Image (cartoon, rainbow, N blue to C red):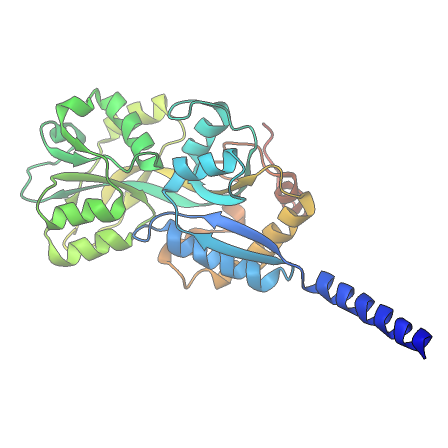
Length: 319
């Protein structure tokens, strides 16, 4: 009898152990951005796709302070995955400003969609072009954000200093709130259009977007090749009835290079095989395609992601 009991106990423990292994989850956090931007809803949708389609993974989209802050988290192994701009990812990898050290563990998974430099102004401000922002009240992006880094590059080409303006460092939501309070003349936002916080602002205030000349864009792209010329169509926001020519960078999905190759392969495969589930989340998501997955790659591609792309016949860039 004692022997039978022992056998049953051992059998129960084995079943419990096997069940435990079967239900074990790998928890992955994906750093996104503030709730007023595009990263937050898109990142949340990406996390849902992975959680539903990779049984061993539980992915959660986390609010974040966007590109620079997200890459600091990746570089210091504090988070597994993040959304970030391709330009800021390159600066993090190579240790260029605004970073103070190299983060050689940053790895690329996919390019997602263009992020437009959206320069908001009020129609009563008199600001028509980038050179008109001197002497104005200007928000240049949150500290540690890709917005602030991109604005710094634009200002260098324009030869405009922060001291030339009444400058404030604000995120998307605070930028639009300052417009509502009539405390800003110009605000920089870098995000896929339409951006929720700008849509909200346009419903209540008479705003416009600054148009960049081809001459200025030529100088900007020559100095910083990660920028591209893009157009925000007329009617994207209420009251703006003209196309707006503006620079853009690419929103990218990056990760810690220490992540297991098979894990990243499974995640990459599940994402692209279920990409249509992301399209209802945000209009910008419809621009995310497998064909464009490697456009703008500015850091080494993670081996797990590279394995998937090679399987589907794509050429993976080397760094």
